[in-house]
Image 1 (cartoon, one colour):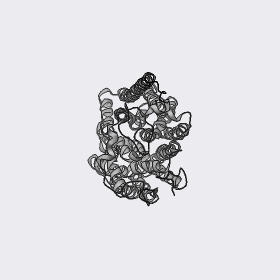
Image 2: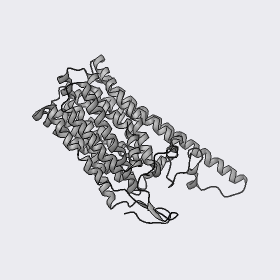
Image 3: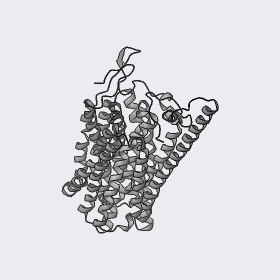
Image 4: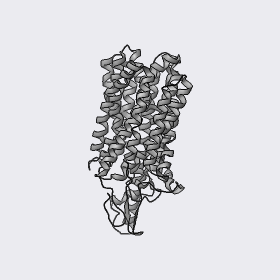
Length: 458
């Protein structure tokens, strides 16, 4: 499938790559969209088991936490065997978890079956499928990721009202049983993930499935020493603290404001369909030559706008007022989700993308675990959702501010380096170093990435 060139084959940027994009699309539908729809079960679980907000919120947080905490395990299985094995095994585990959840007799059993078992299955599927897209695309990478990650939005749009209808027809147990059969489609997606091959003249043989056949080594984690990646990682921690709360508490908040069950579920559908628009439009836009150097700035703006939306949520006490929130939050959520793997790839380089994504999603784990219960505790203590949405908005704005600071430092180092080189060449009467080469500054490059990829755009 790959084009043969001297030394290394280029990603095909099409062909079977679009099948890979379709498979990743379905993986995000069956993992992230299903996880989002668990919030629709929130009131049902609370009423059936007689639990408070905080105890019930642990179900959603355990699914998210396990998915992200075990993301490096997904990378490991993909690297050691193949992403086919990882996704098919993950699909089987997550389907079994949902099946067992439909027979659960206590919240503690739901913590294990829905939270841990299904979350582990989602983890095995998510990271390898996303990394696979990066192996098949380079020139149209952002667009490919935008389409692939839009599965989260379109899945939410379709599944949210469908799950609500299933609950009304068959109760929450029957709805989980149907979701179990639906998630089993992950096994089919895994079977279609064909490993890409490349040609290397030095060895004269075909190999480099997309993932290495060896266990991970410390060499594959050298990107952890890159200052740009460290700043990105701290930003991701704050992002994860805030981004999950609106998905958990939007439906309960709408119900507390007097919105009907159908309209509350429809808010999730609106959020989901606009999420798709954000995925694809930002993916297409940031692939344009004039915008490509500013991908990180686009990412920062989308995260900051999400934070502002959350701060205004407590003022919205009716369905017509909550619709604009769902539109804006969904759009910018789709934008930043599509850009996470792209920005990460820009920082660490394509060869490190699988391992880096495992670390990136691992960083989401603990915030995903503790933020929904903390949000539920704030609701129990204050009797309103104001503090919960303020917590979400503040965390998202902090994430954007941290990354903006990293960009500012990067630009200062860049200007200082260019000035120093210009002064040195002036003193020695040599021609100044071209600005196009100044990105090779030692201030932010900790190692030589192969193939060379651009660090955070200055």
